[in-house]
Amino acid sequence: MRKIVTKEKVGKFLNRNMGTIVAVALVVVTICGTVYAGDADSMWTEIADTIKKWVTRLGGVVMFVGGVMFGLGWKNDDADAKTRGINTIVAGGIVTAVATITSSFFK
Image (cartoon, rainbow, N blue to C red):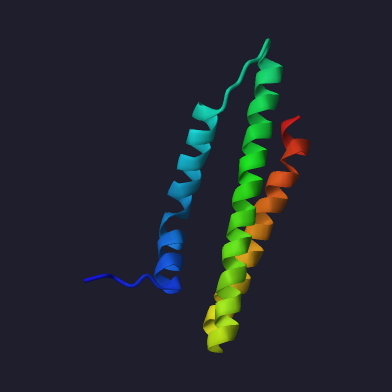
C-alpha cells in the first residue's frame, strides 16, 4: 500500500529537521569543496565564499518551496496554507539576505 505524501507532511518534516539539514549541507560543502590555498587568509576567503554560495542557493530553494505552498493554498482556498507559504517565502528571503551580506562580516 502506497503512502500519500502531502505538503503538510513535507512541511512538518522540514520544520522538524531544518537545523540538521543545514548542518549536514554545510559539512558536506566544506568537506567536498576543493580548497587550495597558499595561506590561511585565502583559504578562509574560499571557505566563506563557498558557504555563502550554497546558503544563498538553499534560501532560494526554501523560497521556491514557499511559493509552491502559497500557490497550492490559493488553489485549495486554504488560508492556513497561504499563511504557511508566505512564512516560508519570507524565511527563505531572510536566509538569502543573510548569506548575501556575510561578505561584510567575513572579510
